[in-house]
Length: 82
Image (tube, rainbow, N blue to C red; front, top):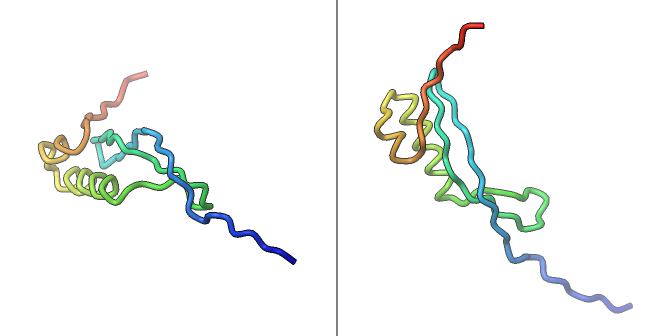
C-alpha cells in the first residue's frame, strides 16, 4: 500500500471585513482581515487585529472615545422615537 503526503498547511487567503464592538451607547467599527486557511477553525484573525479589537473595546469601556477612535470608527447610538 502506497501513501501520499499532502501539504497540511494551505496558503491563507485574505478577506477584508468589519467587526462591530458595542459598549453601552457606543459602537466601534474595526476593519480587520479574515484569514482563510481551509482549517476547520478558519477563518481567523491575525494577532494584530485581535489587539486592535481589544484596544478599541477597552477604550470604550473606559469612556476614552479618543483612544477608541485611534483604532476604529466610533459611533454614538441614539434611540429613535417610533
